[in-house]
Image (cartoon, rainbow, N blue to C red; front, top):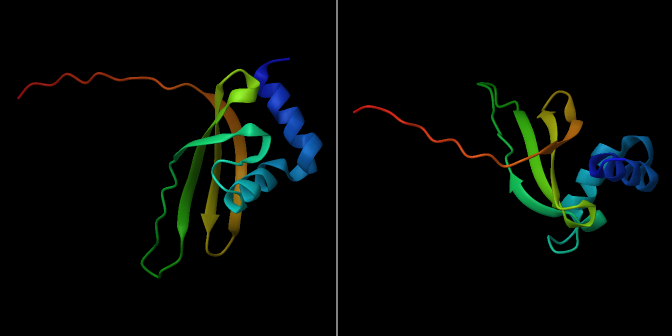
Length: 105
């Protein structure tokens, strides 16, 4: 069982079938140094946007480091819309990469 699978299993054991939303809800209600399952928030990459009528249409991405699961990083992805509420769709393991861009001036 990979570290990601173990993390997902522990999430489901703790929160049940709605574990993505429940985990994010817990992280929003907790102090940053006391997140569930030993998680550490690394980046909050939420892209909050509004249309011309003032309705929210946002893409949500949060990256957590999981020291208790072999120091893997996971990204939770979801959406928040004024007319449909907040939904968390997936969690996947991610790795930080570096891009070097060369250009001519």
